[in-house]
Image 1 (cartoon, helix red, strand yellow):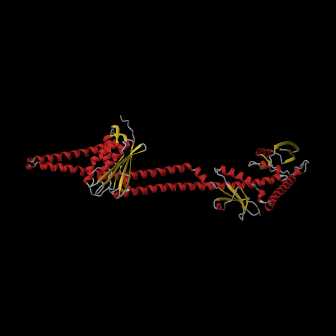
Image 2: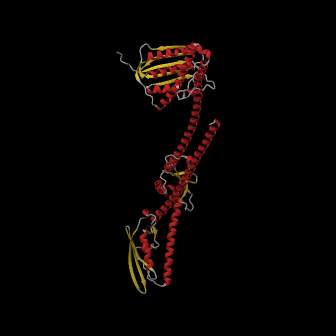
Image 3: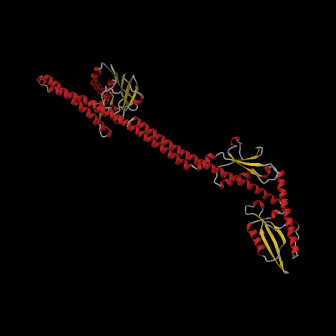
Length: 543
């Protein structure tokens, strides 16, 4: 795949992924905004209900304090029975003969008269105290003004004009009663301070009940202020002026006639946490979706880049293998062509030399093929090591002796620092020798002129340490992370001046890991490299 197509594909996927994430974030923000709007709407309803209940409670308190009004509070069931008693009668009018009260019991004596016939009934009901009155409390439409006079109040006349006078008299007394109550309320408006009309605990109790009924369980903070924003009541330890725009307000006692207004202001300092807590499922799901989208994007891009890199490595490997195989094939071809010359055939020494060349190149071809095959075996983890006790000092010296000739051919110098005391390890002699040979051979190959190579062996704690250093071309940081990958070679442009398939260091790492060892690299571009091997030390018992 061409470079520009890869960039185009990655860019397209990135834009699509960012678009999906942006849509998801927008959806979450929009959902949270709707939840917040619903929160404030419910909070406003709760505050308004609180104001209504506070005003109703004040009215009930004043009615209880009124001499006649305190008798007007009976339960709904009693009210219904009294109303039915009035509706069921067939007489011209109903007379309240006598009303008396003992504790919570109210006794009403009713006399009915028609065509000279009288009937009397007594109704006994329980009176509720106004301070305990709830929504079910109703006011009886019964004239009890005569309670100021304990004597029975009897209406004898049955004539229509007299009945009209009675009704008018009762309406007048009722009007006076209501007027007195209104007067008392106005007097409260004018003279009673807000701190006496309502308490902090009463506001807090009613407000919390109203909020809870609407599903708002976070703790509210409230203040009662006048029209000059002066605070008169609050449940806050410290009042934060920054919360002015983050509150719900409603006027307390909105039906006051002439009094200056007071406002109940409610804020929610832990609103954000409450909204997040109540919407955790939506937020968790959205976060999971975003993580999945980003993971898929990363995996896709990573796969594309890996495919591109593997394609480059494959092409590199094919080019290197072609070049490596082409050289011995060409040599063999030339040797065979030379031997076919009749003149060469007469020269036994020349024939012997060409036959030797053909044999050497054939071995070289075999080694190249074997190296590729071994790499496949190592990759599958199918190779087996022949473990034995090995003296590293001797093994390292043997490897150095074999490669010394190649270093001298480049006018190089190979110096050693090998410990005098024998160091033993457990390993496969053949594979361990190949590991050491590969490292020293790489140090020689990647040094341009006059290689300077240093090989050292020492014991550090319970491990054997082998270092191979050179002053060659070095390896850049970006290539150091990939140097042990299979088929990877440090790019050298189109110049193929170094032999190999990129399998050597990969093989080295696999063998060392199988033996329980490790390898480290320190390199600086243009100044050389140092490969350090660590192997578990094994002190053999010598006979």
